[in-house]
Image (cartoon, rainbow, N blue to C red; front, side, top):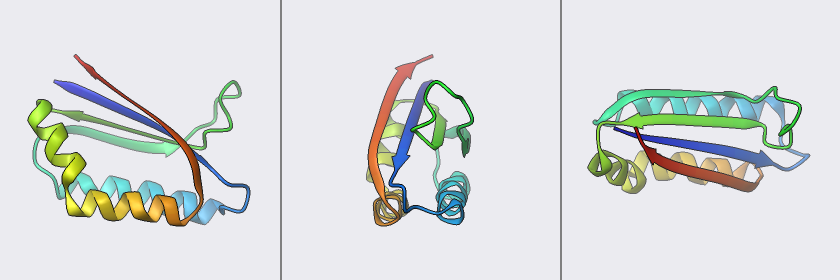
Length: 97
């Protein structure tokens, strides 16, 4: 199993409504993609890393499912929306469970 975690940092002009829309669009991928074991998204409330406002995590059955996710058109649409609403940085990590 593969775990992917992404932290997203947005510009100061990004609204709370836009952050919530990022979360909702990401969560909608769960019903679209195969090979997903679990998918979560939410607002970060940790004080130490508060500059990253949104956290996305997804567990895949295997690396093939991760690769399919990365290249999926709907995932690409969500990534484009994230950039559109003001993403200034992101950190993504993948590891095997």
